Image 1 (spheres, one colour):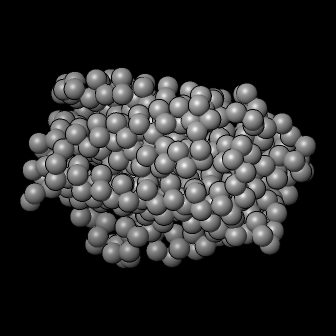
Image 2: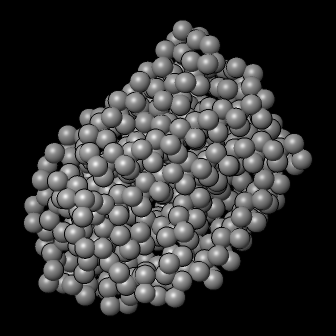
Image 3: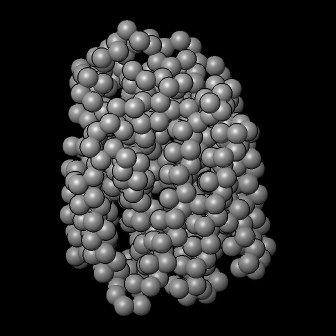
Length: 435
């Protein structure tokens, strides 16, 4: 079983192994593109289906919850059955669910279809992280998660921009047809180029008993729990923005769908750039220092949103505040992901599933809150983002706890080998990065 100090090499020797990193990074587009593509037409969808604002926002919430559930299920299954089979099933289901969204006759059925679409998309997200942990360790692991953050930001740029452009030639149903086509293209790439990263002798056994033992191991580790909570709470602020910004920028400030797409693209560009910088800073400087810097940026951006709501500040202030907060979320992503996953190579899928579940479940809870007061005010957005960042900052205290030696997990090929002893500490990863 691999450790943080030596990178696994088995994937690189398989057919198509050199292309595996690119394929894994491609899987990270499921989350951003599922969420972002149709946001410019969310107000139009609300009108066509004769839905209340809060009800229409449940299409966002349903996808978030689905992404959380999909990861929670697919992660442990991929530890047991390998990464490739669950991934193929998930991508096929994503294509079918996207087509279902396109023909949904009511907002209620669209919400159900979005839930299924999210579950299917979550499979790709969790396997991208778990397979990355199969392939990399140390500094390479930090760089990989930095690339994941960058590509997520790039997909978030392309999504709303493509949605804004497609809005000029089609309606929201056509956007879901486009998502089905994107899923079909990804399915073709996965079928041809994704080779298994988890050999059979590295997989877990023992069914639900082992799964429960893995969850107990993870949830008893304070550093893992701290990283998950920080990531979950900053994601709550991020997804509150995703759900509420279209109503704020278009409904309150009068931006067109194309102008909104450009503003969204600016924020996503910030996410991409600062995600790359965060990976470099985490590797060369400090995981925890980078995390704190990201939280400070998040706090400044959220405070700006709250001030804009209370004082009716110009749209430029709102856009700058959103850019600062979203970029701060990107800065927190590589360090929290590395801290959460670096110490658990034997159950990387399960660890990634809990991390991803927290991100999307917290986001799914926060998203509808921004619409409770209707589309005419941005005060709920300011309150939710400030609360999420404050809770994330409070959760950092858990990261100071050292990990106690962990017992070996039953049902693995390395049953006699304990989990890695706190490889997510700054010194260990910095040493590995410098080799």
